[in-house]
Length: 323
Image 1 (cartoon, rainbow, N blue to C red):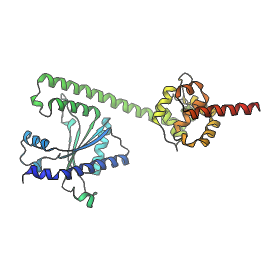
Image 2 (cartoon, one colour):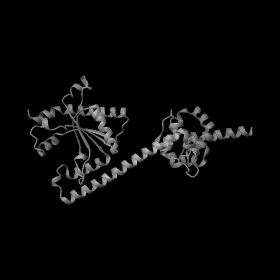
Image 3 (spheres, rainbow, N blue to C red):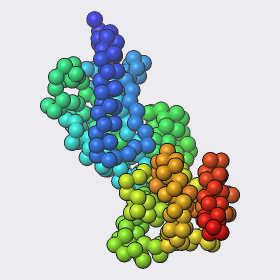
Image 4 (cartoon, rainbow, N blue to C red):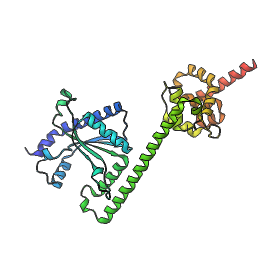
């Protein structure tokens, strides 16, 4: 029986192995609080194995090929690549590591992912893992921009760059340089946002400082976490609130807080009547604005039941005053 026949017989095992690698990365990422843009795995096809053997003149495939199983973690930012790199080294036994970026010269452009060859270590034992004892998986860590460049580059030229016409290779290198600049801009923006969030979080120590902050996504998030820590935040509703609010009338969190204070009785009454409509802290914010600001009420698109609740409570207040 030749090597390819043996590999064919083990493809099912490799498929199970990749699923377990992906599952482990998913669960460990959650535990570490890490988010990725995409996570995928694959098992090398017979044709892909044969092409690699021929392309690299491999004599001992069982010893020289380490990417029969493969996974790819796609991040948004360079900083996340480093964090996932640390995670892989923590949860797996690392057999080999290569940082493609470090191999590029100062005048070179190209794929800049981090490659690992890993296996399940001593921490993973028992019947679930024993069958994977001898198997190794390649794991690549890259970014969305690098992933796009690699996909298009491989579609045009696959992996035989020496066969590319010079003019086309120059164009591809130019694109790589532009994407590297774009990645740096995104990374810088990401870091600036982290610094901004860190700065505004300090304002929670002083209520006046907090209420003086302008209304934006991050300050609204801080407001909700400060005053409604037990409630979740709906990013969708929060973005819609920012779009619908009149920024001339509501410039700061203090302006928003006034609306919430004025709507306190309505919110308490309506929340008692319809608790299922107050799943998010953002529900409190929007309904407070809807009750106190007619312009926001018309623009935001409240459900009919909430519009009726506004009117009903307003009438009860008017009746109470007249009475």
